[in-house]
Amino acid sequence: MSQFWSSLLHHRRHPKRTVAVIAVVATGLITLVLVGASVVPFSSETAQAKVIAVLADRFDADVEVRELRFKVLPWVRAEGAGLVIRHRGRRDVPPLISIDRFWVEGNVVGLLRKHVSLVTVEGLDIEIPADRNRGKEFPGRAPDRDGSQIFVIDELRSTDGRLVILPRDQNRKPKVWGIHDLRMQSVAFDRPMPFEATLTNAIPPGEIATKGTFGPWQSEQPGRTPLKGTFTFARADLGVFKGIAGILSAHGSFGGTLARIDIHGETETPEFTVKGGHSVPLRTRYHAIVDGTNGDTLLERIDASFLDTALVAKGGVVHTLGSEGRTVTLDVTMDKARLEDVLRLAVKSPQAPMTGALSLKTTLRLPPGDTDVVQKLQLDGRFAIDQTRFTDVDVQSKINELSHRSRGNTPQQQTERVASQFEGTFTLAGGTVTIPAVTFDMRGSIVRLTGTYDLIPETLDFAGTLFMDVKVSQTTTGFKSLLLKIADPLFSREVGGSAIPIKITGNREAPKFGLDTGRVLSE
Image (cartoon, rainbow, N blue to C red):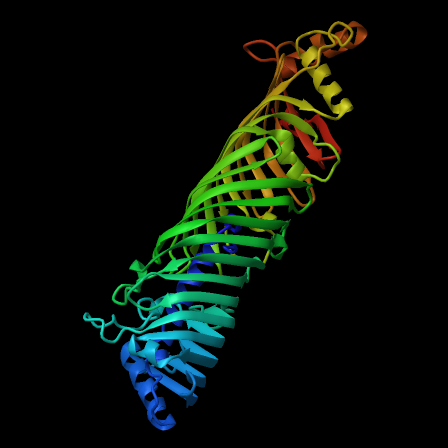
């Protein structure tokens, strides 16, 4: 659940997992009701056989108990080890539930009322098969309609457990969550069960605390089992995703059913960093819907902000067939953003090279894989930048001079600081930004370019045309103006002014602007 942001953004990774984990863990622990139901003063062999028979019948499963001992006075107490519950006839997958050791405590009066005082579990292991077995991963049948077989565990405690999601491809690593501590009350199939738990999220690593209610259990359609609660996700390390860094925290609430968990949450990452850029404080609010039976997430809305920039996104985090992990797909809109904020994320220089008001719409796709985010991120969108100015004095001076000369003024005649406008389309794939069309507009001239920008080496390769309001010879005075009259016909336009082929190469810190002589000669 976080995603989102961990979600957001490897799905790595946000508080959606909290809900999925707790839902499945609670389901597994309900099996211990039947252990309590069997605590009667039989001989050990008789009691062990009864436990196995009841559990096998209740869960339509193959059941094993390696060791079981009873003590009747002064309290009824059962101690057991090696409890294993398997899908019936399924030896090709690990057991659904296995428990290293368990203790069941109660008293005679309580047992007559079908109540077990306390069940303590160590080493709970829940392993959920891949999606191909969906619908079979939660065995069991509903309690009898008259309630005659319903026992209630007043309190259940579990330590040192784990939840494992097995991948479809046996060559892939399973997803594992460590469940440090779990407390449940009134554990039974026929009612909502309060719980509190702390666990470790695997990717990104971080500590999750959650509490709420789970149930009543819907054995025929497990996805309809209700749940609700709150969660916190502390110190999630985003550094496990190559190309970004930061420590994320999140909190929120969830509700609905296991197959459709409705989540509202907030995240904060004080020092969110993209490789090669500065850290910024990143905050998000999100509304997501999670399928707790397979982990797929629908991101209804994400509101994110950093510095003076905000964005809105919606999309999903879903499993990708044939690959490990999930793909993040988003539609992103930035209506009121600052160019300098976005550039601060991308460049390491103390000051952003440009400032301006940015608007942007793009689709974002982040496929799974163990590569830098910059390399695997895919974008396809359109942008516009208004009131653009360059922070480098020399660069801005050249822009001012170009604008003045394009209108037939000399720098001595006009010294105003010129603002520019950019707009265009772009794509990003494999770490390279491709811009098929961009327009750079300022008073007296327009530049139209196409080309690429490689993010890692920060190199430019653009070609285009500079359109000026005046002839080339009118951009200067005196003897230079007379010499340039020779070139006027070469660059003249039918509508007046000049059209000069240009190219921009080099790197971001030292771009090279020049006449594209090859195009001049060819034209």
